[in-house]
Amino acid sequence: MEPEPSMKSLRLNNNILSAGWMLAITALLGTALMVVVNWHSQPYIKVNERQVLLKTLNTLIPASMYDNDIVNDTVLLQDMDLLGSENDSLIYRARKNNNPVAAVMTIIAPDGYTGPIALLVGVNYAGTIQGVRVVKHRETPGLGDAIDIERGDWILSFNGKSLSNPQATGWKVKRDGGEFDQLTGATITPRAIVQSVHKALRFYRQHRSEIFYIEPTTTE
Amino acid sequence: MTDTTSGNIIKQGLWTNNQALVALLGLCPLLAVSSTAINGLGLGVATMVTLVLTNMIVSSIRHWIKTEIRIPMFVIIIACVVTAIELLMSAHFHDLYLILGIFVPLIVTNCAIIGRAEAFASKNRFLHSTLDGLMMGLGFTVILVILGAVREVLGYGTVFRHADLMLGEWAGQLSVTVLSDYQGLLFAILPPGAFMGLAVLIALKNKIDRIQMARQVSVESVGVTFESKN
Image (cartoon, rainbow over all chains, first blue to last red; front, side, top):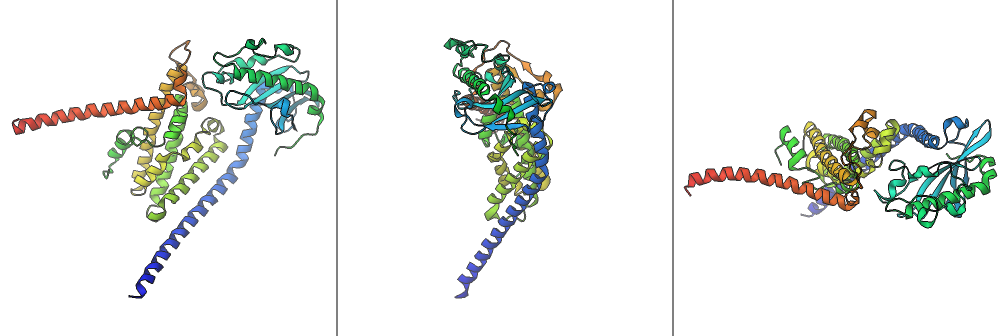
């Protein structure tokens, strides 16, 4: 009778061990597959993402305006107060024949109705807005999300605006006595964006030479 | 349930054991993504592809899997398939990825996938498992599209908006404005609208089943009364 329990536990041990091996091998195979797929996909993904970015940038700065590699000609600058992020903000620079023609700033409107709103602000060299786009937001569907170009034209109302058009008092929504429309049922969202775009323009005026003449930051 | 003829697999997937209406699996992605018909279609197709692939894999290795560790095995397989799909889509169908991309990781959270691996693919033949994945996925997709369409009409007054983004230029004509100059019912687009919409669909399905059953019962009971002279 003695050997039986140990036989039993031996068999149990074997069972557990082989199950463990099987799991380990599956995990290894899975990981190997992921490595191969990832290794195959990464170069394609990089190219695709670059093209998407370029397409977005071109809606703000038409491709005919510049001849440099705008996706890689970037600089990182940090200004919590005016650019809305405690991290570095990425700025794309457009040049023609090596003369600066425009810049696209990525900024954050920290005080959206449901969290921060990420924006792209394109300005030409003189400081007039070429266009603004919402990159990322979580505003209420049907109300605040009309800031998205897919959902409404409101964001186009920034085109052609600058620090002198309108004056500082006009850089508010109409409800606050400014020149910009609010959205039906949403005032907080447009208010946050108008303020942030205004701040970005002030940042641009203060730092224009830095923006264009600092050596490019590689963002690999 | 043991009836695994092709006809029964199709019926189970589309109606009797519909993952969204009866099994109530995969509710998280279902409710989160069904705000428009096209979103629903996107998630549905992505889920269907995953379900077919995982069912195929699980079924073909079903004899080697030890029962004690089958669940972690399924998890590894599903996670790998979903990640591979996401990466390959991003690499080769980037436009589609930009629209569906957010849905693909959501599939991992869809219990319907592991549910089918456990309940069907681990016990059945390769071809039957493949068909099961396809039909379960299709049943899920149909419900997603219907729910999405209902919420879209109520919420935005349109159907199949942005169809061109997913299906190509020609699909732009699919977009129908049902109610023009419509202010939109915000409730339908927000999460409570998803719950209510799904509840209505489940109720409808139950109603149809009830009516069918009543018809059968009345036929049978007529037979019974006749025989028992009551």
